[in-house]
Image 1 (cartoon, rainbow, N blue to C red):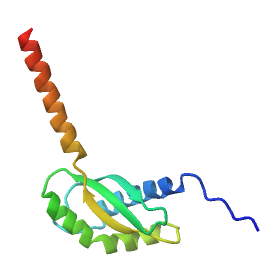
Image 2 (cartoon, rainbow, N blue to C red; image 1 turned 30 degrees about the horizontal axis):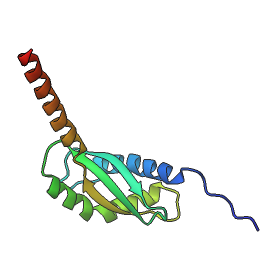
Image 3 (cartoon, one colour; image 1 turned 45 degrees about the vertical axis):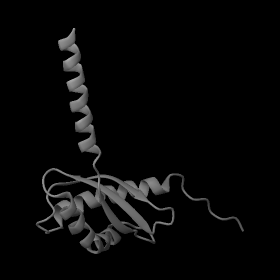
Image 4 (cartoon, one colour; image 1 turned 90 degrees about the vertical axis):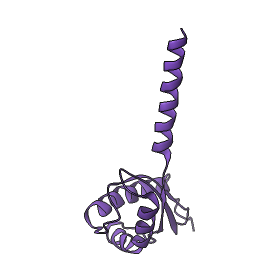
Length: 122
């Protein structure tokens, strides 16, 4: 008997849907005062859909405190994801603060400083 082939890029589609749903759930359903303006930057799902790393950034607030609050609310968020997603296994969520935007701003500042010092020399 032939086995049905898996849908190509299904993991990426699931991760993308989790990202969209989590953004909405955190904004509307999560009432923890430690969680402010959170942006979900990326979601990485394991091939067996058992775990998902959720990378986020914040506008203001303490990254460690927000990470702790989101990881404590992971069960609540997973339960709501289960109601929204129509997949057999909803992954366990692991939140990690993403410093990419901070690094990009630092690199921009360094480039601007280098350009301004170069123009002063000329």
